[in-house]
Length: 112
Image (cartoon, rainbow, N blue to C red; front, side, top):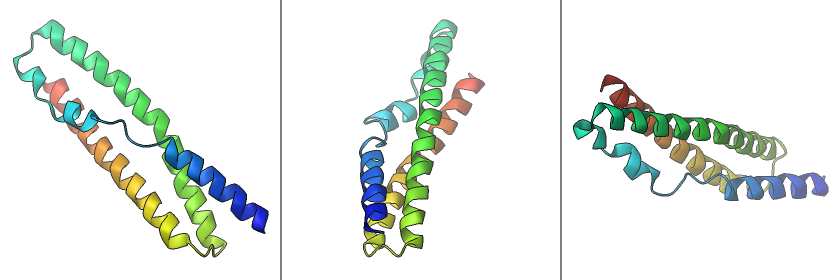
């Protein structure tokens, strides 16, 4: 049983370290740079945004894996589950906020 905890905690810690939302992307996602952009600039912004959305989707699997590991630790009655749950919730909240900003920018770019 101890080896299961060690493995899950190692995996959880490794995934948590590698899944932090990209720094500074919130500012980029909230930028209104498209409002004064030409059509060719908007097309370039849209292409850049689509690449970002693709990258975000690729990371979503890791966020889901973190949540699954946290759930498994809960089911095994890991003594420090509250700490694991708090870290997991923080990551999920950050990625949800980033996803909402991404969706909002995508919609704004489509309108232009």
